[in-house]
Length: 479
Ligand code: IDC
Image (cartoon, rainbow, N blue to C red):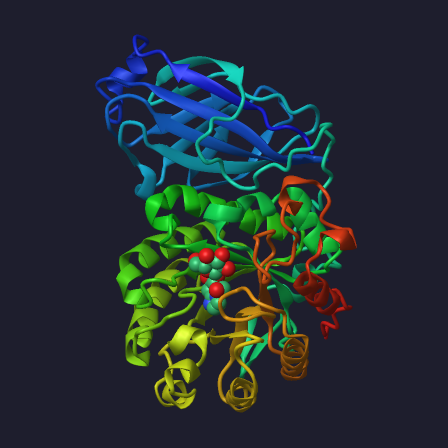
């Protein structure tokens, strides 16, 4: 894996030029730093993360400009800002939600680019017309957009799949998904089952979501799906909305480049009432839906595990968030969490009938069901068997262990569950594709600080079982 190289450029506070004086966005006392990081590179293309940090007075609007140093470099798609290019000059205008930058605050943005030759990095940046000069340095200790690089002794090129939706991949075969009847259906209007993995919390385990690890997930695990678990609390989204939004978008791209679907999980957990996060959800989904509307690989999961809240409360939340997504991305599948930690109500002593009797008033949606095999057994399986005839279900999270995420793996119950999901064509994602020190993690502790994600030695007992199930050949219908 190549080393990350960041360019640090510090704006000269004295160099307030004419452009800045004319710009309504210019700060009285400007000052900024730009970290430019090539996060991925392949034959013919690359991806870069750009962090704009305001070191001057608070800014209420900013425009970043830089020149791409090689004529063969072109911006293909940028995110979290409005990107344009004229000749070598790239102009990046803040998005509504990151235009205000307090002193010391940053905006994480990024882009994918094409290139025909070498990939030199820009060395000069302006923010609001103020020329920045600086020196080449290492990444700053502040959080960088995923993927976090996996340190390896020797920098090596990392060839990755560069054919989004390539013909043989899950996205290449199935294309844009939709709900038909109670099933998830592909572009041929035929039911399919997606099998994949969930990340752990991005705030803790982003090192497990590198280009290398996701190559292994796509190629060795043959996963169809990456669930991107973005916690809202617990040092997650609420602490840095722009940064977490950028990380999610980056993972959507990494999944897309490998032909995998990306399930964007707004990982609410505590507090359990999703309405607590309603305003955040609207802001987040407006942004990711607008940014990813043109992609075929995105599915939205609007609330991980509602708990301590009635179905009416969840339904009300869903009916306010879904229109925000639809306004930007009309055709994507949306998944709604269910009562009792997404147990269809069973863990609260209820059942799926409360949903059947009062479904969310929206089309092209599914309902989430979660289980942990050592905790949730026959009565939950009976519920799923029954509910699957009436409601489109998606197991967006399950564990082979107890609901705490720890304890012994229950092989018999896990196998019974996966057999049932296969039989019903219900898609699933396993918690977690990480090396957390807990038995639900698929990778042994320490795996994500290395570069080997493929050998059997890196798998936990749970990882070995789940990989053996996920990596069997898909049988996606193509007509
Ligand atoms: C767990 C993690 C654990 C973390 C805890 C609190 O495995 O490391 O400390 O969350 O954030 C869920 C949740 C999921 C839980 C998981 C295991 O969706 O966030 O992860 N679980 O407890 N529902 C049932 C189980």
